[in-house]
Length: 428
Image 1 (cartoon, rainbow, N blue to C red):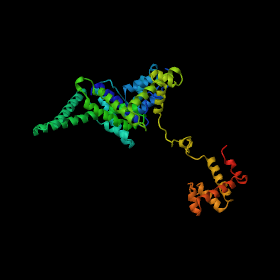
Image 2 (image 1 turned 90 degrees about the vertical axis):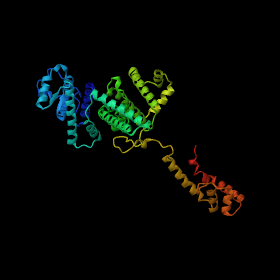
Image 3 (image 1 turned 180 degrees about the vertical axis):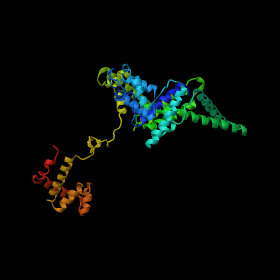
Image 4 (image 1 turned 45 degrees about the vertical axis):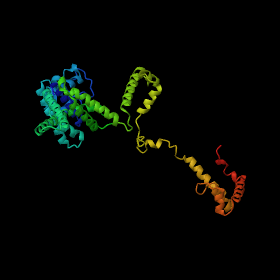
């Protein structure tokens, strides 16, 4: 790639190492306010948070860039004039300052040192972190110049043309087919090299989408698919850099994958875009109004009805696991606090059990035949009410006789001496 592209990738890789290596901080973190006269020597300078972060970075990499030093000075206070003291401190720690504005040669030297240091850190830590291992692997691939990009793009284009010629040319001579096969193979190798040289671009873009419902490695993988598509579609004759063109394809692939895969319940891509637009509008209205906007106010901005806004808000809700811990003790989950409408209320279950005992006691005041007739007629034994004929067949009598026995028994049960025991269980 060109010099500008190489610079972009070098900066991106410095960010990779800073974020992934344990104990490394950003030179711009936690800016400490400092009076211009407060810095008098390197000992006092080394106590500042941003300077400490720069030292950690330098010890891990073996060097820092001139840009890192400038950012640290700006973070401390541009008025303190700590440049000399800071450079003296870095020199005393054996940390070299690499000038990134010295041209492409310096950038390539920085790039090589970054890769070497990344490998050294990975080996020292003995880590099995797949992200770190992946960054180590892609860091071994050198960046491309603009001329190399064009050359590879030409070979890719020729390879695709050869593949198409082979597929449609059934009558080609044997030597011609061999030539086309060689061109096709050359195009495939060029395609692979162009993809591998830009994998770090995918990582730098993928970092912006962390925390949106997909694992970092999955986001990288989707971005790699977009990069492959960009290689196939790249038109070198237009004169722009490949990284500029590939960025759009990578973002497109990542955003489409997040829309399709990030949610437990899939939402169509067009609805995801609508939800994002609604969320942005809601945030702007929150800033303007100083309160949460109503669906009517949001709908007015988006030119849709309040009912449609409420529907979109319902769709945008994320599912919540019933196993989500509640409280600090982790001894209860969200599901414990959600009402089960099909479950029996404990007080109703206790009342029903007492009612069964009372009914059983009252039935035992009847004769065996009367009790048996009532139990069969009202399904107290098997849960199924039986007809007069079925009960009569069980006793060997007519259905009319069973009807008489049932009527007589019900009259007994309605007597206050028995019915008063059950009256408290009746619904008011």
